[in-house]
Image 1 (cartoon, rainbow, N blue to C red):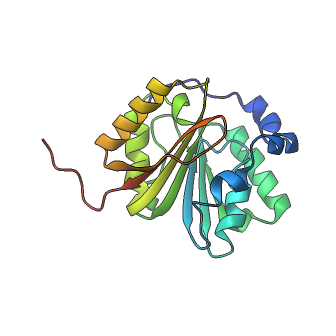
Image 2 (cartoon, rainbow, N blue to C red):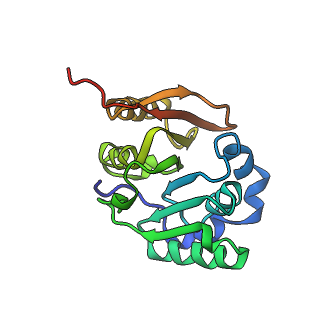
Amino acid sequence: MGAGHVCPWWLGPLLVSPLRRLFESPERLLSPHVKPGMTVLEPGCGMGYFSLPLARLVGPDGKVICVDVQPRMIEGLRRRARRAGLLDRIEARVCTSGDLGLSAWSGRIDLAVAIHTVHEVGDEGAFLGQVAAALRPGGTLLILELRGHVGRDAFEATLRTAAGLGLVEKDRPAARRKLAALLVKRDAPAPKI
């Protein structure tokens, strides 16, 4: 996927600060899309600001697959999940910038959430292609980016790239100060033109 701009690991504790809930509620953003028992993928999970709420939402029969390129982010996530009693619902692992390491999950993910992440990868096509391969047919991808941090043109280009990989736009959920799109994986590959 190449090298993009990656959020430094030392910002991890700040990103999971309880004060962040004042302007960005994980439950409000995610609960419309997550059901108990789901298998959810969160690439670029950091120290788990969204991962722990996801683990609560999927319940004891669900699973959250968390990948990040930074070992210290994954260590922080595991520590927080252990303290919260949610480690059994979370599979957290370090990936590389070119490989999310999702081959074991191919076609098994119900929902992927790329929150403030896509703009950080160097090769969006490779990243989105790996996420699409992990999704089951009919599975969904929720992309959220901060307005101003990512421009509308760049966001639309991301959605065009995703469409070329068989991820069709289903909805534009309302999300304060965010560009948001919910995409669904086609049941069959798109015909080649």
